[in-house]
Length: 104
Image (cartoon, rainbow, N blue to C red; front, side):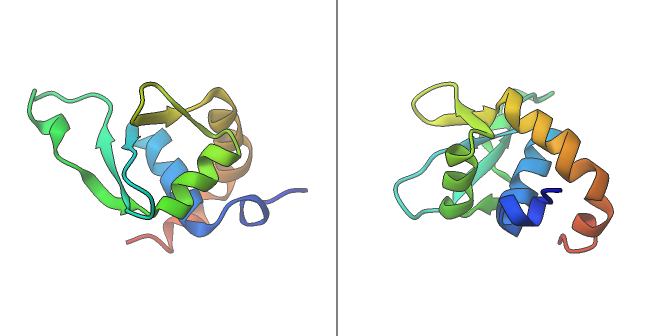
């Protein structure tokens, strides 16, 4: 059986889990700069402009793109793809107890 640790780094796992559970998207940055994570929905109009959570390292974001777990919705925004949701449901959610213990 493939486990999340065999497929994604810890940073990739945490980013994908946050994107799914907290309904976030990533805003791409220049090469090697961390990507801010922003809410997909916001009750207040200007709240969506503020980054949430810890930014995602560019290597983790690139890993998610490479595996097809996130996809571009514009030239700079990335959301979880259908395969990303399936991977989360199959590989991350069942093991989330050990992931949650290593989070901030």
